[in-house]
Amino acid sequence: MSISTALPAIVSKTKWRLIPFMLMLYILAFLDRSNIGFAKETYQVDIGLSNEAYALGAGLFFVVYAFLGAPANLCLRKFGARRWIGMTTLVWGALSVAMGFADSEAKFLTVRVLLGIAEAGFFPGMIYLTSQWFPQANRASVMGLFYMGAPLAMAFGSPLSGALLELHGWLGHPGWFWMFVIEGILAVAAGAWTFSYLDDTPAHARFLDAKERETLQQQLAKEESSKSSATIGEALKNPRVWHLAVIYGTIQCGVYGLIFFLPTQVASIMGSSVNFMTSVITAVPWLCALFGTFFIPRYSDKIQERRKIAAITFCIGGLALMASAFVSPYAAIIALCLAATAFFACQPVFWAIPTSLLSGSALAVSIGFINMFGAFFSFAAPLIRVHAETIFASPAAGLVSIGSIVVLGALAIIALGKQGSAQLSTQTNK
Image (tube, rainbow, N blue to C red; front, side):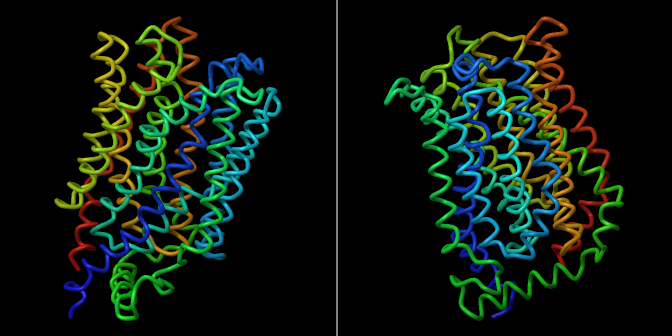
Protein backbone atom coordinates (compact mmCIF):
# COMPACT_ATOMS: atom_id res chain seq x y z
CA MET A 1 0.00 0.00 0.00
CA SER A 2 1.40 3.42 -0.98
CA ILE A 3 1.93 6.28 1.45
CA SER A 4 -0.84 8.35 -0.17
CA THR A 5 -3.30 5.48 0.25
CA ALA A 6 -2.42 4.59 3.84
CA LEU A 7 -1.82 8.09 5.17
CA PRO A 8 -5.45 9.33 5.60
CA ALA A 9 -6.30 6.43 7.92
CA ILE A 10 -3.11 7.00 9.93
CA VAL A 11 -3.80 10.74 10.23
CA SER A 12 -7.35 10.00 11.36
CA LYS A 13 -6.08 7.56 13.97
CA THR A 14 -3.55 10.11 15.20
CA LYS A 15 -6.25 12.78 15.42
CA TRP A 16 -8.43 10.59 17.61
CA ARG A 17 -5.49 9.90 19.90
CA LEU A 18 -4.00 13.38 20.24
CA ILE A 19 -6.64 16.02 19.52
CA PRO A 20 -9.09 15.22 22.37
CA PHE A 21 -6.16 15.18 24.78
CA MET A 22 -4.70 18.46 23.45
CA LEU A 23 -8.18 19.96 23.44
CA MET A 24 -8.72 19.09 27.09
CA LEU A 25 -5.41 20.66 28.11
CA TYR A 26 -6.16 23.81 26.12
CA ILE A 27 -9.58 24.13 27.75
CA LEU A 28 -7.98 23.94 31.19
CA ALA A 29 -5.19 26.34 30.23
CA PHE A 30 -7.64 28.85 28.83
CA LEU A 31 -9.86 28.62 31.88
CA ASP A 32 -6.95 29.15 34.24
CA ARG A 33 -5.62 32.19 32.39
CA SER A 34 -8.97 33.88 31.69
CA ASN A 35 -11.18 33.03 34.68
CA ILE A 36 -9.93 36.20 36.33
CA GLY A 37 -12.40 37.98 34.01
CA PHE A 38 -15.33 36.34 35.79
CA ALA A 39 -13.98 37.10 39.24
CA LYS A 40 -13.14 40.70 38.31
CA GLU A 41 -15.95 42.55 40.09
CA THR A 42 -16.14 40.67 43.41
CA TYR A 43 -12.43 39.85 43.52
CA GLN A 44 -11.42 43.49 43.09
CA VAL A 45 -13.80 44.60 45.82
CA ASP A 46 -12.79 41.85 48.25
CA ILE A 47 -9.03 42.46 48.05
CA GLY A 48 -9.11 46.18 47.23
CA LEU A 49 -7.70 45.82 43.71
CA SER A 50 -7.86 48.89 41.45
CA ASN A 51 -8.76 48.77 37.74
CA GLU A 52 -5.18 49.69 36.87
CA ALA A 53 -3.74 46.91 39.07
CA TYR A 54 -6.20 44.44 37.54
CA ALA A 55 -5.15 45.41 34.01
CA LEU A 56 -1.49 45.23 35.04
CA GLY A 57 -1.91 41.76 36.55
CA ALA A 58 -3.84 40.53 33.52
CA GLY A 59 -1.03 41.83 31.33
CA LEU A 60 2.01 40.78 33.42
CA PHE A 61 1.06 37.17 32.78
CA PHE A 62 1.84 37.74 29.12
CA VAL A 63 5.12 39.59 29.63
CA VAL A 64 6.92 36.63 31.21
CA TYR A 65 4.92 34.25 29.03
CA ALA A 66 6.26 36.10 25.99
CA PHE A 67 9.96 35.96 26.84
CA LEU A 68 9.96 32.29 27.78
CA GLY A 69 8.02 30.84 24.83
CA ALA A 70 11.01 30.27 22.53
CA PRO A 71 13.37 28.72 25.14
CA ALA A 72 10.45 26.61 26.39
CA ASN A 73 10.04 25.09 22.93
CA LEU A 74 13.73 24.23 22.86
CA CYS A 75 13.26 22.54 26.23
CA LEU A 76 10.39 20.54 24.76
CA ARG A 77 12.70 19.33 21.99
CA LYS A 78 15.37 18.38 24.52
CA PHE A 79 13.30 16.73 27.25
CA GLY A 80 10.42 15.36 25.16
CA ALA A 81 6.78 16.33 24.94
CA ARG A 82 5.55 13.87 27.58
CA ARG A 83 7.73 15.13 30.41
CA TRP A 84 7.70 18.80 29.42
CA ILE A 85 3.95 19.17 28.84
CA GLY A 86 3.17 17.04 31.88
CA MET A 87 5.32 19.12 34.22
CA THR A 88 4.11 22.39 32.73
CA THR A 89 0.47 21.42 33.32
CA LEU A 90 1.12 20.28 36.88
CA VAL A 91 2.84 23.55 37.80
CA TRP A 92 0.32 25.89 36.22
CA GLY A 93 -2.52 23.95 37.89
CA ALA A 94 -0.89 24.38 41.30
CA LEU A 95 -0.45 28.10 40.67
CA SER A 96 -4.07 28.41 39.61
CA VAL A 97 -5.02 26.96 42.99
CA ALA A 98 -2.71 29.54 44.59
CA MET A 99 -4.80 32.32 42.99
CA GLY A 100 -7.50 31.41 45.50
CA PHE A 101 -5.17 32.55 48.28
CA ALA A 102 -4.01 35.75 46.52
CA ASP A 103 -5.89 38.12 48.82
CA SER A 104 -3.79 41.24 48.27
CA GLU A 105 -2.53 43.25 45.34
CA ALA A 106 1.05 42.05 45.85
CA LYS A 107 0.01 38.39 45.97
CA PHE A 108 -2.22 38.83 42.92
CA LEU A 109 0.60 40.30 40.84
CA THR A 110 3.10 37.67 42.05
CA VAL A 111 0.90 34.70 41.23
CA ARG A 112 0.00 36.12 37.82
CA VAL A 113 3.72 36.43 36.99
CA LEU A 114 4.43 32.88 38.15
CA LEU A 115 1.43 31.59 36.20
CA GLY A 116 2.82 33.26 33.08
CA ILE A 117 6.16 31.50 33.63
CA ALA A 118 4.47 28.13 34.10
CA GLU A 119 2.23 28.41 31.04
CA ALA A 120 4.95 29.77 28.74
CA GLY A 121 5.81 26.35 27.38
CA PHE A 122 2.29 25.07 26.80
CA PHE A 123 0.75 26.84 23.80
CA PRO A 124 3.86 27.19 21.59
CA GLY A 125 4.66 23.61 22.56
CA MET A 126 1.25 22.46 21.31
CA ILE A 127 1.70 24.29 17.99
CA TYR A 128 5.15 22.75 17.55
CA LEU A 129 3.84 19.32 18.56
CA THR A 130 1.15 19.59 15.86
CA SER A 131 3.84 20.23 13.24
CA GLN A 132 5.66 17.08 14.39
CA TRP A 133 2.65 14.77 14.18
CA PHE A 134 0.53 15.91 11.23
CA PRO A 135 1.25 16.46 7.51
CA GLN A 136 1.06 20.01 6.20
CA ALA A 137 -2.07 19.40 4.10
CA ASN A 138 -4.05 18.56 7.26
CA ARG A 139 -2.55 21.13 9.58
CA ALA A 140 -5.10 23.97 9.51
CA SER A 141 -8.04 21.66 10.25
CA VAL A 142 -6.05 19.86 12.95
CA MET A 143 -5.13 23.14 14.61
CA GLY A 144 -8.74 24.21 14.18
CA LEU A 145 -9.80 21.22 16.27
CA PHE A 146 -7.18 22.12 18.86
CA TYR A 147 -8.23 25.77 18.87
CA MET A 148 -11.78 24.73 19.62
CA GLY A 149 -10.49 24.40 23.18
CA ALA A 150 -10.67 28.17 23.64
CA PRO A 151 -14.33 28.68 22.67
CA LEU A 152 -15.21 25.43 24.46
CA ALA A 153 -13.53 26.78 27.58
CA MET A 154 -15.45 30.02 27.30
CA ALA A 155 -18.77 28.43 26.28
CA PHE A 156 -18.88 25.72 28.93
CA GLY A 157 -16.32 27.21 31.27
CA SER A 158 -18.32 30.43 31.49
CA PRO A 159 -21.34 28.77 33.16
CA LEU A 160 -18.92 26.65 35.26
CA SER A 161 -17.08 29.73 36.46
CA GLY A 162 -20.38 31.51 37.06
CA ALA A 163 -21.74 28.55 39.02
CA LEU A 164 -18.57 28.34 41.15
CA LEU A 165 -18.87 32.05 41.91
CA GLU A 166 -22.32 31.25 43.36
CA LEU A 167 -20.55 29.21 46.07
CA HIS A 168 -19.80 32.52 47.79
CA GLY A 169 -19.69 31.99 51.55
CA TRP A 170 -19.38 28.20 51.45
CA LEU A 171 -17.00 27.10 54.22
CA GLY A 172 -16.28 30.76 54.82
CA HIS A 173 -14.66 31.45 51.43
CA PRO A 174 -15.76 33.79 48.63
CA GLY A 175 -16.98 32.39 45.31
CA TRP A 176 -13.83 33.43 43.46
CA PHE A 177 -11.78 31.28 45.87
CA TRP A 178 -13.68 28.15 44.86
CA MET A 179 -13.49 29.02 41.18
CA PHE A 180 -9.68 29.33 41.24
CA VAL A 181 -9.12 26.28 43.46
CA ILE A 182 -11.45 23.82 41.74
CA GLU A 183 -10.39 24.73 38.20
CA GLY A 184 -6.73 24.57 39.27
CA ILE A 185 -7.15 21.09 40.74
CA LEU A 186 -8.54 19.90 37.40
CA ALA A 187 -5.32 21.06 35.70
CA VAL A 188 -3.15 19.29 38.29
CA ALA A 189 -4.99 16.02 37.61
CA ALA A 190 -4.59 16.47 33.84
CA GLY A 191 -0.86 17.09 34.24
CA ALA A 192 -0.43 13.85 36.17
CA TRP A 193 -2.31 11.95 33.44
CA THR A 194 -0.08 13.42 30.71
CA PHE A 195 2.93 11.40 31.89
CA SER A 196 1.21 8.11 31.08
CA TYR A 197 -0.77 9.14 27.99
CA LEU A 198 1.34 11.34 25.71
CA ASP A 199 4.01 9.96 23.33
CA ASP A 200 6.97 12.17 22.46
CA THR A 201 7.11 11.65 18.68
CA PRO A 202 5.52 9.48 15.94
CA ALA A 203 8.51 7.14 16.31
CA HIS A 204 7.35 6.39 19.87
CA ALA A 205 3.61 6.22 19.10
CA ARG A 206 2.20 3.27 21.06
CA PHE A 207 -1.20 3.59 19.36
CA LEU A 208 0.28 2.98 15.87
CA ASP A 209 1.73 -0.29 14.61
CA ALA A 210 5.25 -0.45 13.15
CA LYS A 211 4.10 0.02 9.54
CA GLU A 212 1.89 2.99 10.45
CA ARG A 213 4.72 4.65 12.37
CA GLU A 214 7.04 4.19 9.39
CA THR A 215 4.51 5.59 6.90
CA LEU A 216 3.79 8.68 8.98
CA GLN A 217 7.48 9.33 9.59
CA GLN A 218 8.25 9.03 5.88
CA GLN A 219 5.62 11.61 4.95
CA LEU A 220 6.74 14.04 7.64
CA ALA A 221 10.41 13.57 6.67
CA LYS A 222 9.56 14.24 3.02
CA GLU A 223 7.88 17.51 3.94
CA GLU A 224 10.68 18.54 6.29
CA SER A 225 13.29 18.02 3.55
CA SER A 226 11.54 20.59 1.34
CA LYS A 227 11.56 23.30 4.00
CA SER A 228 14.24 25.83 4.82
CA SER A 229 17.18 24.42 6.79
CA ALA A 230 17.85 27.78 8.42
CA THR A 231 19.68 28.05 11.71
CA ILE A 232 17.98 29.56 14.76
CA GLY A 233 19.78 32.85 14.16
CA GLU A 234 18.81 32.96 10.49
CA ALA A 235 15.19 32.24 11.31
CA LEU A 236 15.03 35.09 13.82
CA LYS A 237 16.50 37.49 11.24
CA ASN A 238 14.02 36.47 8.56
CA PRO A 239 11.71 39.46 7.71
CA ARG A 240 8.83 37.07 7.01
CA VAL A 241 9.07 35.68 10.56
CA TRP A 242 8.94 39.23 11.95
CA HIS A 243 6.00 40.04 9.69
CA LEU A 244 4.14 36.97 10.93
CA ALA A 245 4.99 37.89 14.52
CA VAL A 246 3.43 41.35 14.19
CA ILE A 247 0.31 39.87 12.58
CA TYR A 248 -0.08 37.36 15.40
CA GLY A 249 0.30 40.22 17.85
CA THR A 250 -2.70 42.02 16.39
CA ILE A 251 -4.69 38.77 16.49
CA GLN A 252 -3.99 38.36 20.19
CA CYS A 253 -4.80 42.00 20.82
CA GLY A 254 -8.26 41.33 19.45
CA VAL A 255 -8.66 38.07 21.36
CA TYR A 256 -7.71 39.41 24.78
CA GLY A 257 -9.24 42.83 24.20
CA LEU A 258 -12.48 40.84 24.01
CA ILE A 259 -11.97 38.02 26.53
CA PHE A 260 -10.96 39.96 29.62
CA PHE A 261 -13.92 42.34 29.32
CA LEU A 262 -16.67 40.23 27.73
CA PRO A 263 -18.43 39.21 30.99
CA THR A 264 -18.65 42.82 32.19
CA GLN A 265 -19.55 44.07 28.70
CA VAL A 266 -22.41 41.58 28.46
CA ALA A 267 -23.52 42.54 31.97
CA SER A 268 -23.56 46.19 30.92
CA ILE A 269 -25.63 45.35 27.83
CA MET A 270 -28.08 43.41 30.05
CA GLY A 271 -28.10 46.14 32.70
CA SER A 272 -27.01 43.80 35.50
CA SER A 273 -23.93 42.65 37.41
CA VAL A 274 -21.87 39.60 36.49
CA ASN A 275 -23.85 36.59 37.71
CA PHE A 276 -24.84 33.13 36.54
CA MET A 277 -27.34 34.43 33.96
CA THR A 278 -24.73 36.80 32.59
CA SER A 279 -22.25 33.94 32.30
CA VAL A 280 -24.81 31.92 30.30
CA ILE A 281 -25.29 34.80 27.83
CA THR A 282 -21.52 35.26 27.70
CA ALA A 283 -21.25 31.67 26.52
CA VAL A 284 -23.24 32.39 23.34
CA PRO A 285 -20.38 34.13 21.41
CA TRP A 286 -18.08 31.24 22.29
CA LEU A 287 -20.58 28.66 21.02
CA CYS A 288 -20.63 30.55 17.72
CA ALA A 289 -16.82 30.61 17.73
CA LEU A 290 -16.83 26.87 18.26
CA PHE A 291 -18.57 26.25 14.92
CA GLY A 292 -16.46 28.81 13.07
CA THR A 293 -13.22 27.35 14.42
CA PHE A 294 -14.29 23.92 13.18
CA PHE A 295 -15.49 24.82 9.68
CA ILE A 296 -13.28 27.71 8.50
CA PRO A 297 -9.90 25.92 8.93
CA ARG A 298 -11.38 22.81 7.27
CA TYR A 299 -12.37 24.96 4.30
CA SER A 300 -8.85 26.42 4.25
CA ASP A 301 -7.39 22.90 4.02
CA LYS A 302 -9.88 21.95 1.34
CA ILE A 303 -8.92 24.78 -1.03
CA GLN A 304 -5.32 25.10 0.29
CA GLU A 305 -5.67 28.85 0.80
CA ARG A 306 -4.43 30.50 4.00
CA ARG A 307 -3.73 34.20 3.53
CA LYS A 308 -7.05 35.43 2.09
CA ILE A 309 -9.19 33.36 4.43
CA ALA A 310 -7.28 34.53 7.50
CA ALA A 311 -7.40 38.19 6.40
CA ILE A 312 -11.11 38.27 5.56
CA THR A 313 -12.09 36.42 8.73
CA PHE A 314 -9.96 38.66 10.93
CA CYS A 315 -11.22 41.88 9.35
CA ILE A 316 -14.84 40.85 9.92
CA GLY A 317 -14.00 40.34 13.58
CA GLY A 318 -12.49 43.80 13.97
CA LEU A 319 -15.42 45.54 12.31
CA ALA A 320 -17.91 43.55 14.38
CA LEU A 321 -16.12 44.44 17.62
CA MET A 322 -16.32 48.14 16.79
CA ALA A 323 -19.97 47.84 15.77
CA SER A 324 -20.90 46.26 19.13
CA ALA A 325 -20.38 49.65 20.77
CA PHE A 326 -22.95 51.49 18.67
CA VAL A 327 -25.89 49.16 18.06
CA SER A 328 -28.88 47.92 20.07
CA PRO A 329 -28.36 45.32 22.82
CA TYR A 330 -29.54 42.40 20.66
CA ALA A 331 -27.43 43.54 17.71
CA ALA A 332 -24.46 44.04 20.07
CA ILE A 333 -24.65 40.38 21.16
CA ILE A 334 -24.73 39.31 17.49
CA ALA A 335 -21.71 41.54 16.75
CA LEU A 336 -19.82 40.02 19.69
CA CYS A 337 -20.65 36.54 18.32
CA LEU A 338 -19.13 37.52 14.97
CA ALA A 339 -16.03 38.98 16.65
CA ALA A 340 -15.44 35.91 18.84
CA THR A 341 -15.92 33.58 15.87
CA ALA A 342 -13.53 35.53 13.65
CA PHE A 343 -10.79 35.97 16.25
CA PHE A 344 -10.57 32.24 16.96
CA ALA A 345 -11.28 30.83 13.51
CA CYS A 346 -8.50 32.85 11.87
CA GLN A 347 -5.78 31.58 14.21
CA PRO A 348 -5.48 27.93 13.04
CA VAL A 349 -5.36 29.19 9.45
CA PHE A 350 -2.66 31.67 10.41
CA TRP A 351 -0.49 29.01 12.12
CA ALA A 352 -0.51 26.86 8.99
CA ILE A 353 1.66 29.54 7.34
CA PRO A 354 4.78 29.59 9.58
CA THR A 355 4.78 25.81 10.06
CA SER A 356 5.12 25.46 6.28
CA LEU A 357 8.28 27.56 6.08
CA LEU A 358 10.79 26.15 8.60
CA SER A 359 11.69 22.93 10.40
CA GLY A 360 13.54 21.61 13.43
CA SER A 361 14.93 23.96 16.05
CA ALA A 362 14.43 26.95 13.73
CA LEU A 363 10.70 26.20 13.62
CA ALA A 364 10.51 25.63 17.38
CA VAL A 365 12.16 28.98 18.10
CA SER A 366 10.19 30.82 15.42
CA ILE A 367 6.90 29.59 16.88
CA GLY A 368 8.04 30.80 20.29
CA PHE A 369 9.14 34.12 18.82
CA ILE A 370 5.85 34.68 16.98
CA ASN A 371 3.97 33.68 20.10
CA MET A 372 6.10 36.17 22.05
CA PHE A 373 4.77 39.04 19.96
CA GLY A 374 1.28 37.74 20.54
CA ALA A 375 1.89 37.77 24.28
CA PHE A 376 3.15 41.37 24.18
CA PHE A 377 0.01 42.47 22.38
CA SER A 378 -2.07 40.40 24.81
CA PHE A 379 -0.43 42.35 27.63
CA ALA A 380 -1.16 45.62 25.86
CA ALA A 381 -4.78 44.86 24.94
CA PRO A 382 -6.39 45.38 28.40
CA LEU A 383 -4.27 48.49 28.96
CA ILE A 384 -5.16 49.93 25.55
CA ARG A 385 -8.85 49.37 26.14
CA VAL A 386 -8.86 50.78 29.68
CA HIS A 387 -6.81 53.86 28.74
CA ALA A 388 -8.92 54.57 25.66
CA GLU A 389 -12.07 54.38 27.76
CA THR A 390 -10.51 56.68 30.37
CA ILE A 391 -9.15 59.27 27.92
CA PHE A 392 -12.39 59.57 25.93
CA ALA A 393 -14.68 58.84 28.90
CA SER A 394 -16.56 56.26 26.82
CA PRO A 395 -16.67 52.45 26.75
CA ALA A 396 -17.01 52.68 22.96
CA ALA A 397 -13.51 54.16 22.68
CA GLY A 398 -11.94 50.95 24.01
CA LEU A 399 -13.81 48.80 21.50
CA VAL A 400 -12.94 51.09 18.60
CA SER A 401 -9.26 51.15 19.55
CA ILE A 402 -9.00 47.35 19.69
CA GLY A 403 -11.08 46.93 16.54
CA SER A 404 -8.87 49.34 14.62
CA ILE A 405 -5.75 47.37 15.53
CA VAL A 406 -7.48 44.22 14.30
CA VAL A 407 -8.33 45.77 10.93
CA LEU A 408 -4.69 46.86 10.54
CA GLY A 409 -3.67 43.28 11.30
CA ALA A 410 -5.95 42.01 8.53
CA LEU A 411 -4.26 44.39 6.09
CA ALA A 412 -0.88 43.08 7.27
CA ILE A 413 -1.99 39.54 6.40
CA ILE A 414 -2.84 40.69 2.87
CA ALA A 415 0.59 42.35 2.69
CA LEU A 416 2.24 38.96 3.15
CA GLY A 417 1.70 38.43 -0.57
CA LYS A 418 1.22 35.11 -2.33
CA GLN A 419 4.66 33.67 -1.63
CA GLY A 420 3.66 31.84 1.53
CA SER A 421 0.55 30.32 -0.05
CA ALA A 422 2.41 29.34 -3.20
CA GLN A 423 5.17 27.69 -1.20
CA LEU A 424 2.59 25.85 0.89
CA SER A 425 0.78 24.51 -2.15
CA THR A 426 4.06 23.35 -3.69
CA GLN A 427 5.04 21.46 -0.56
CA THR A 428 1.72 19.75 -0.03
CA ASN A 429 1.51 18.60 -3.62
CA LYS A 430 4.99 17.05 -3.79
